[in-house]
Image (cartoon, rainbow over all chains, first blue to last red; front, top):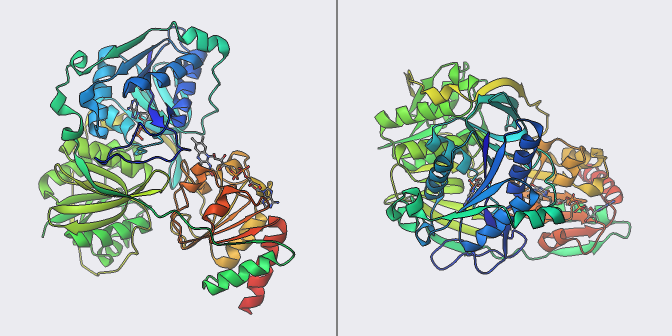
Length: 260
Length: 318
Ligand SMILES: Cc1cc2nc3c(=O)[nH]c(=O)nc-3n(C[C@H](O)[C@H](O)[C@H](O)COP(=O)(O)OP(=O)(O)OC[C@H]3O[C@@H](n4cnc5c(N)ncnc54)[C@H](O)[C@@H]3O)c2cc1C
Ligand SMILES: Nc1ncnc2c1ncn2[C@@H]1O[C@H](COP(=O)(O)O)[C@@H](O)[C@H]1O
């Protein structure tokens, strides 16, 4: 069984993230890392591989600049077999449509029974890529799973929606996405980190996938940012130490603000 | 005036509040047409009309409840093909966003997700979004095709604009992938008497500092008529249901007042609450980052401060 795990290299969420002049995410000013939410996807893929079919073959896939390879190495250090890095100057500035096209072509070229994604990337965070991938690949999507099981050519899981918790089921091939509630991701062991260095990591550009430059990148983007304005940072108000009347003081504040 | 398609989010035929907000926003852009999937209730059409729906497309097919997302995609794309709308608005729910993504792909349209406001400009709708843990406000517009936009709850207050909608039943031809991701079982969430997290004017949240006992947080919430929120640490510990989690991987709220008790204020928590109008924090650690955002903060033990607050509210109300 061929499992492809889509992972993204993202600017560290705990740093001050900014935009460049042209309104795209600034990827140079802060360190980047494997999106924490994609660690859960890696973990689930590894568990699926460990639990079931012994022919499971796990490949990580990323679309991003050269240093996005770091995300692939990190994933490989956790486990899995190989990695595929798609990098091309013309991909820069792609929106979800462009990125999903590149991912879909790469997945088709590699072949797949199951695609595993994170629930959302921690930078763009649209949470739509798995659905777009499924649409492009023409396969079902079972997304936002808190629990996921693969058995006998099918995938099933539990999805917590806004108004109901649903159990879902689909035949493979399919695209799934998993949440941060499906089980903690493992830490790479020293042995894993050493082994990762020897695992195959292939790099491809657009021509290798048969994609024309006009189909992706900023010029193909279907929406445009008019402006990105930094919100004025919140200013700290009055902070008081409780010396026995902290609750009453809070009530005075809330009354002045007309909440009481 | 051009039609604006609004996908109705409903429970057993009752439109949820975000749908009424979408209808209100849609009136800025054109004539709202609601797209209703499933079996309606007695007052469904009337409610949609009260908030300005000029037309209601009804797709009453079992598929829409039996399979995830794709039946809605088939329905919306088919309706869009004949209605030629000027925009399509959907709620920013899990289903709403995925439906939007697939519809946009099929229509060759641009997509904007998680808008917190939508206004009209010459060429079409303009959106506002909060990004990077709500540290940036982004203004954007769609440059290709019929704009597909998902809107977060509370983007605007629902305003009635009574209309008597024309009702059009639509027979949708569902594609093969629509019968693939099957809903095997559905457990509706039990509703509490408290306001819903995304809809509440006031949210009172507890974190790890609550140490397993949310009753103290619930009492403050009830005294203020508020919804109850929780940090991921509190949810992971099993003290409160996940549906109440506030933050990056929970619900993003933007109430008039947010009260955080025993919450440190990690970036992922802030991502879900820092656009709140007023923020108040109670934490025994004076260095807790949550105080950096607080309009008013009490450095103290929440088990002392919160009960006193409740007593004081009761006293002030009599
Ligand atoms: C990918 C990812 C996604 C995440 N998503 C979310 C999310 O959506 N929402 C979220 O909340 N977190 C999220 N987190 C987790 C986040 O990083 C923090 O771990 C979490 O918010 C901490 O919760 P807390 O503030 O309750 O706990 P802690 O950080 O442990 O803070 C507890 C606070 O309570 C105070 N305290 C203790 N006892 C008392 C007392 N008696 N009286 C007053 N104060 C007291 C302490 O001083 C401390 O400041 C995410 C993390 C990751 C990696
Ligand atoms: N550039 C990328 N390369 C590989 N996978 C990606 C990329 N962008 C998004 N993904 C996958 O799609 C998921 C959802 O992303 P998003 O729709 O951007 O929030 C992520 O968790 C990843 O699994």
